[in-house]
Image (cartoon, rainbow, N blue to C red; front, side):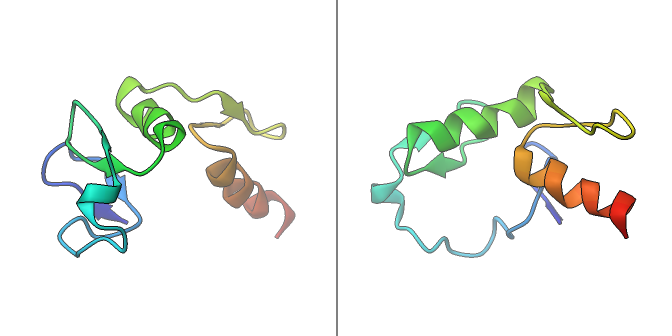
Length: 80
């Protein structure tokens, strides 16, 4: 996890490293931190980070996550 210098959110990829997709192919930019995405749906998912919305809850402990991927990663702690 690497904290963003712009918004402080921790990202899995280093924002200082060049993206695999050129900026011209990422037309959807976050109005809060400037991170850009190639698909509108990816921007919508990213915006959950800034809003604090966490719609995916762990069925065992109730901890909430902004993405199903993060929820799935967390659920592994319960199964070992």
